[in-house]
Length: 267
Image (cartoon, rainbow, N blue to C red):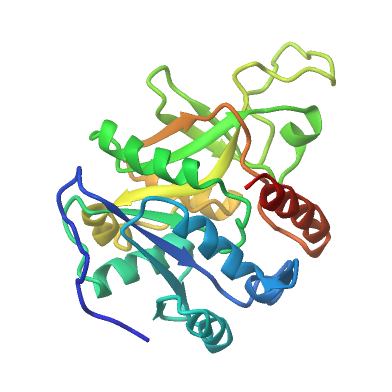
């Protein structure tokens, strides 16, 4: 299942892109999450469907778990077996990029294995956005906060940006903060929810593992803070509509099934 070939690799920054789906079995909040059935189908295969609906040149599932690998192989999905000790999804994606010999400006989109409702249009937009912002090491997406509950929910990561769209900070806390004590029902118009999908260039991924550990990353448990701490830029494009919230806990399953059912009915 592991492959060192560079079949389909395109290194020019304006060429196509690849999708890597990191998936691990041992989630502390929801063990076995990638294999949990949604509408009778393992979650990881719904994520693969979203990836295949994009314009990506290739789609690869990256895992260290034989159970996840077996389900994907049975569905004729390419799998790369990775090390078990990766501290983040980005580290796992970087290993895949190295094994696949993706180099230079080749673009890689990391689509998390618990995002079965991610619109394929968001994936394509993200990949294009990285080309449009050559000064950014990474690109990601956000959408305006739609409720006070979302703004205060630590499972909904918030982001604040500068006037060029570059990320200033990501946090599980409600940011930006009203210094003068606005009403509890108010949300700052600048507040945005981060959509947990990233685009990288292969040359940046090759150096990612050498970046020093970040205290902010460890405090917030947000891997993208390691990138900001090291002085790199992350461009954050705002989309008009929210992507479906990923599956964090088992209680999110019914909501996601309803979202997927509506998507199927609209296709």
